[in-house]
Amino acid sequence: MKMVMAIIKPFKLDDVREALTGIGIEGLTVSEVKGYGRQKGQTEIYRGAEYSVNFLPKVKIEVAVSDDAVGQVVETIQNSANTGRIGDGKIFVLDVGHAVRIRTGETNAEAL
Image 1 (cartoon, one colour):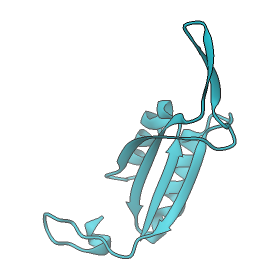
Image 2 (cartoon, rainbow, N blue to C red; image 1 turned 180 degrees about the horizontal axis):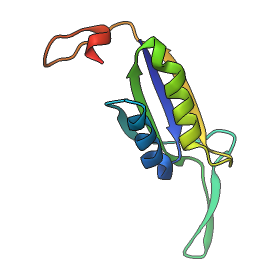
Image 3 (cartoon, rainbow, N blue to C red; image 1 turned 60 degrees about the vertical axis):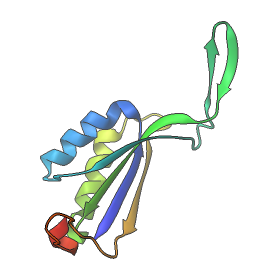
């Protein structure tokens, strides 16, 4: 099992969710986060004063999937979150050692 974690632009969330649903992903977790990468923030003007925003709003998506679905999930997220501009985000794939569905007690692949 793997945990696919993607940090994307907030306005791409619906596109990514619809694309993942289209390939059979039944659940995901979404968190609103802030951060920066190569962008190093941005400059904004508020009430005539210019100031620097060091942390940009992003959305973090987490999806637990079986090992054989990882490639398709990563490709789907990459294609649906891509704008071609700086700040599109990153995708990370992590190992999951154990999973349990609380309601039924199912474990590992059956819990997904």
